Amino acid sequence: MTFQDRFKSTESALVATAVLLAAGAFVMPAWLSFLLTLAFAKALVVLGVVIQMRAGLVSFGQALFFCIGGYGVGLGAQALGISDAFLLLALGTLAAVLLALICGFLLTRYREIFFAMLTLALSMILYGVLVKSSALGSTDGFNVAPPSFLGWEPEGETRKQAVYLLTVAIAAATAVGFHRYLESGLGRVMEAIRENEIRVDYLGLSPRWLLFANYVFAAAISALGGGLTAIASGHIDPDMAFWTTSGEFVFIAILGGTGHVAAPFIGAIVFSVIRTFAIQEAPHYWQMALGIVLLGLILFLPKGLWSLIARRKLQVAK
Amino acid sequence: MTNLLAILFDGAIYASWLFLVAAGLTIIYGVMRVLNMAHGSFYAIGAYSAASLVGWYFSGQTGNPYWSYLLLLGSALVAGTLVGVAIERGLLRFLHGKDEILMVIVTYALLLILEDVTKLVWGVDPYFANQPYRLLGQTEVGAVLRFATYDLALIVVTVAIGLTAWFVLNRTNKGRLLRAVIHDREIAVAMGVNVDAMFTVTFAIGSVLGALAGALTAPAISVTPGIGVEVIVLAFAVVVVGGLGSIGGAAAGAVLVGLARSVAVHMAPEMELFVIYGVMFLVLAFRPQGLFGQTLVRRI
Image (cartoon, rainbow over all chains, first blue to last red; front, top):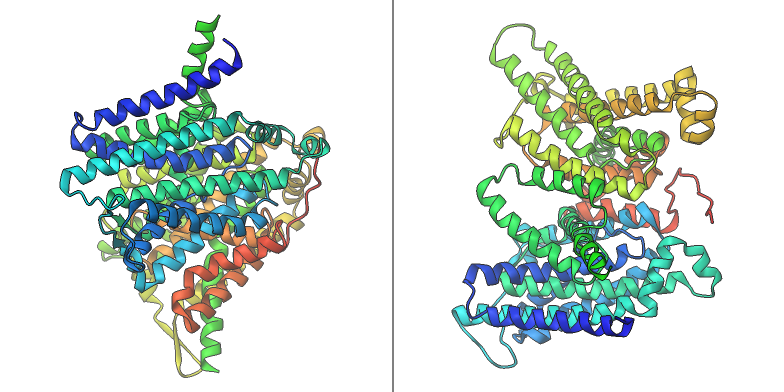
């Protein structure tokens, strides 16, 4: 199989999975489609963490853009009176991109723990502002009115299905787009930057501006995930920007692995399913289980769940 | 004038608390290059063990109430040492020399585990142990201002801890060895310093300091699940402002952040949290190594 073939086969596999999932909307129970909606929205944010991890940067503040996306949708509906889901999502994403363009100038100068700490500080600043702003509901946040879809205003179960289908469509489009990005020159050079940034510099590329672009991309999809979460759950609060939310995204990124665009989606689904049952069965041990799994992953499966799939592929190829 | 005095005193109280919380974190990072997210859990464990022990002591109604202060210190010492040594020997020693960012994630996992361990041991109901806090009463400052004497005593205790740490590091042989490890680990090993033992001792000291911070704070607050998660990011802000790994830096960072917050609380209460991380962000933007940190040379 040549490189070109594989490139296309991955994309068609992604699209086929999306079509299957979309068709599933009419047979699967409501709780499952709701769970998948939130999982896919989360996966978009995690994808933002993953593309930065591939460049060697761990963002402990991706919740910043997750929250901006959510509040963009919420405020767009409440303050500006926009009801169209697409416009709302675009608004949140645009806000995040603008913010990332500003923060990127500063953040791209930092690596390793300094990058992690600075991103964390930024998201905590937003958290601090939101918690204290009573106009936005302080710690309680506020509810997001149900949106319309290009003029169509479904009710009840139909609306939930519509949100699910929208999420699947956006997730699939993003996955295909970012698969191309990861396989492109720009995407590949991120790994080179992780391995040895100074050599990339010597080769005549500017790691700083490449990372800048990468950071803005990450911000955009994270905000998209935040916006979808706000639409799906109908509620936003400042905890979206709290650092433990970012920690959860980092966790899912490590769980899935950074090897493939599908990895964060697999990670997010596994995470959401386990969490749903764990919170029901053992609410007080849930975090402990997370911690133990995280340690286990770091020690025994550093490339995440995706490496299990990748390994099998390799064996089949042999 | 009164307002200024209030800001200064509040700032000093908050700064001393911040220093207590951050000191252990910065020592561990300085020696081991581990930015320990689980430090928040040490704080929580210290607070819980102190609160439950003091609560038990006062429920007996016998004995001199002033012994409870010794109980605070003792519980922090025992709990911190136990947890610190167990974690270092049981897990971290297998990971010495790994990437700093990986260690952040490892200690994040530890934080998640310890959060639930504290819930398992102490349950989810809040603990109150404010007898030591009320015992000292209030002190009047300048006729109009009143502060809890416990808070003012905390400043003294913190200064004492800071001075002790400085003295041990700079004036004793063990401290000089520790500084050698901080300065260059490989050379220290080559010179015959038992770095492994140093790491365990350092980690224990750091976790005792974290537990101590929790134990000394416990009488002033209600001890509930989640206090560790809130504290750890504050401690991060302080050590990052001062420069990771430097005790003096942590002190400077604590004073800066403490005063900034105190000004915000008195002048613009809605800015409280914003100011803390705003200071951190500003310092990092202009001096990424922190106020007292050393610049690292880029290695190819």
